[in-house]
Length: 423
RNA sequence: GGUGAGAUGGGUGAGUGGCUGAAACCACCAGUUUGCUAAACUGACGUACGGGCAACUGUACCGAGGGUUCGAAUCCCUCUCUCACCGCCA
Image 1 (spheres, protein in one colour):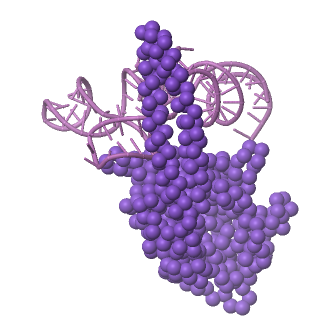
Image 2 (image 1 turned 180 degrees about the horizontal axis):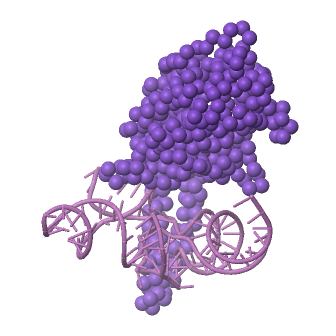
Image 3 (image 1 turned 90 degrees about the horizontal axis):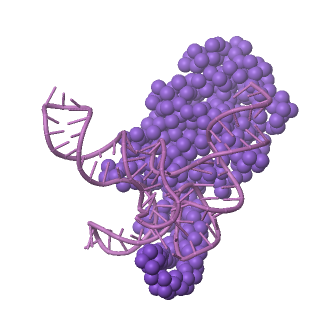
């Protein structure tokens, strides 16, 4: 969430930036500022009262010890009535704080100045493209047909065991999954990321820390008996490592990577958009996470985008980078670059990565801070990106590399798969 | 699942009603000494929200929430978590 300081100091700018994100913040920002002022005024009175009470209590102790009973009793009576008023003030403080918190949670992050205007995916800006579009001729098969033909993935079997959106990978299909995970993790490690193996279920505090809760509760599977949530991405457990932590500046940027299975309920969509591997309830992903100083976070973002680019290049897929417009970005993001690869049989671009800088928005909820050179604490910036999500990569690999002889594995991946062709 | 013990500052750990925002030690930071390093010595050393131009200062926080009391880390209640032993088990 935004900080009160951000809102107080730059009210008009905040409202203007929120408007770019199609969020009418005028009323709510005014409300936040009023509420905060009210809270401050109440605190001044309450603190003064408490200071007086503390002083009197101390006096009573001294009077008792020196045996001045009557004076002590008199002071006691005085204190009793003061306390009543304080109860009221305390309740007001608490209420104001709670209301503030609720309001702040409903305000999205501000888009940074480099984010283009716009509302819909059509307004996203194509930043960069690369790779070669394959020419598959007339009889190209979509990946779900290829998966069946070569017995790589069994969607119906998944339905039997779990439900739609839980495919069963078999044989070279399963080995391809494992190869990609290792390939991505090894690359991340070589790029300087520390590998983490996080828990796949998290508590409510973690869900809140990264912003899945309280609003997007429905997106996560919830194990109600133990009140734990299945993670929708490794971002949740990994980022929460740094919840309520004050980092040393010399340890920044923190660079973590983690593989995890990801679980998403995602009710709603149907049809060809969700056919095959395009959208699943369970999928595999390697995530990269960075925690950095505000001064350096945009350099980190560039490095992350460049790193993801190396992955799609090594996989020899046609790719493009989109700079998302204000309206298409997530609630918590300040700027987002999406990576898409072209899936040639479906003839469509598939999103395989989303790299974002959240600036201090997430860190404020997480209370993730670092110590500046002058020993002050300041909120960190958090960033993350997929590197990469497997299913759509697999879809594109299968479709783009199909030949009459079989499906060819890109060179960089062969050491990981142990085979060069699926036939 | 059963039984017992516990939760205090970056760490170890003292503290059973006022002199404790918290001893001591370690770590970290600044300085002195010293060819360098080390050692030794001196000092500083929690977080948040306020007030003040500032020096500085108020309040809250000893797992969380409530209660008793003029006054709670300390007493009472509830919850959460951790550890140990037993049982079960990958």
